[in-house]
Length: 101
Image (cartoon, rainbow, N blue to C red):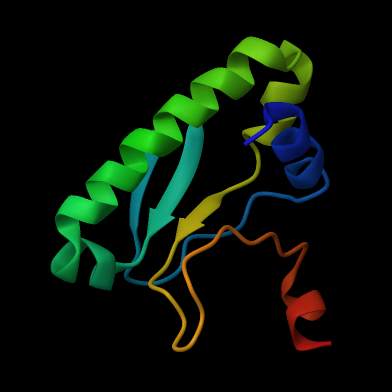
């Protein structure tokens, strides 16, 4: 993924509160919330995904100005199981209201 595109997509969002039951990790300065089902049923795949995320966030740090990286780190990242009938993907939601509309 192009780090500049990732940076532009995430910049407007604010940090999200932790969801009940989610595990929280710090990955390269970003807060990552992980659904318990992933850690219980897909631990190996989840750890692999976290490793890939680490590589991608290091690339963002290397290519995006430090001030922008600091803002991006205010955006919490969430790992959730796939939705039925939908393949795995990254999604961006600017807020809960946007999801309801």
